Image (tube, rainbow, N blue to C red; front, side, top):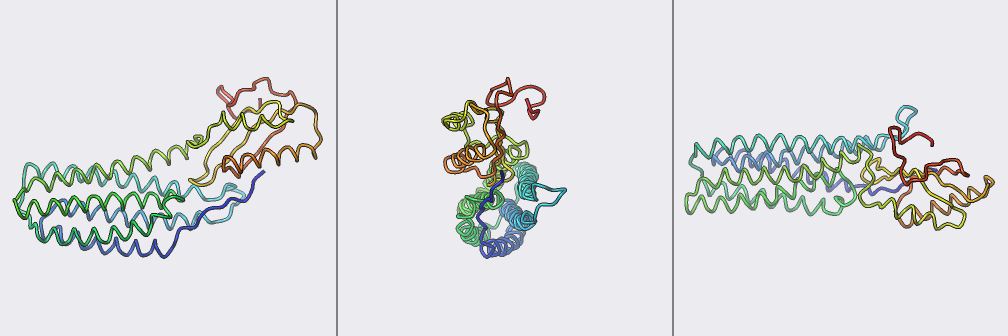
Length: 306
């Protein structure tokens, strides 16, 4: 049985302000990076550009995800948000590779850098990033796309701090190699954040069991019901980052009527909803039908009936 699920709508105003701020920061850092000849500042601009793209794509994906289910797309369009998050992460990896390449060249071909201008622009970028991080912090806990954008912004905030420190070292002590070093550090930060998103999106697309669900614990809890003999062939997966689907076979102790089955199912669904935060539930009742009573069905066809 499928129940209505509840998702938290991200604050559209906060998303819009974050997009506007990042667009302005990107322009400022590109211009500042060119004028100051700072690769670290230009790399920070690329990072901010990817942040802006991430937020825009996330918003568009969330709007598409609201579309009603159709006869063709019976699960709806929520997976578009997962695909968008994966796309954002892959773009960031491409940006990281480019930054590593440019930093490598700059190590062996150092160029003079205007440290003061670099410092001023990086400080402006830091202020804008901090505001955006604060705006998206709350929503990032409930939506994978906003989380992706939030991680981008958090990484860029840290990189802006590094650029500010680097600009001071360049201005006062003329340590020019700090610029490509900062670029590499920024690239590593981007890669790390990207891997977190890619790992989670792949798990969702592969229909892996949610990491916070212990299937054996769920089975044990459901089998405490006085009318249940055995719970087996469990499947649990996420349709999106917030929607969990669950199905299982429930072997009852006696031959029951449909009315009795409805009552037992309601009891089991209440356990799954209240204790495990699952609200898309399908339970198939059996009476000594399956010989395989394992938690999950093994073999080449795990979706086969028995």
